Image 1 (cartoon, one colour):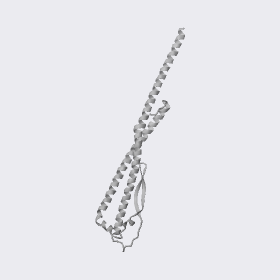
Image 2 (cartoon, rainbow, N blue to C red):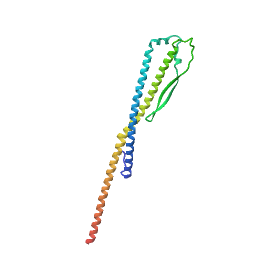
Image 3 (cartoon, rainbow, N blue to C red):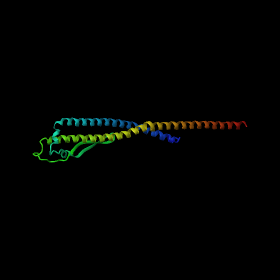
Length: 205
């Protein structure tokens, strides 16, 4: 513990600091709870999206072999052009929110391409979109976890260090000032008695 001044001014400063810590601690605790809740919701959403992708992939296994046919290069049709995002604020933290994926438009001759190509392109674009959404959710979870670590450290600092330290400083200063006051009263009484005794001596002489 750092050395403190044993004065009335320091006592006021310590009391002000304690009030400030006690006012901010509930706010930090609430923020911690909100962050934990949001992380849980984001993780559940990631799981939901990944299950949706697995279900989609399981549903088209029967015709995936068509992609191995010659002259089929579906990659050019499903390359993301841009991932459109927005932002939301959770407990003072800005998080990216997935909106949609825009793809490069590639024209192809309907007479020269396979009949199933449109369906395949639409399907794989939905898979790409799901994966981009999951990637953005995971980025948001990392942002939330970092903020949770910082907030938890602050909560622990206030709960385990700052508040107990200020309370102990206040106790020490009050004890010291109380002792000083008691000593001053004692000295005053002694001085008074000396004056009274001196006056009595003058009368008796």
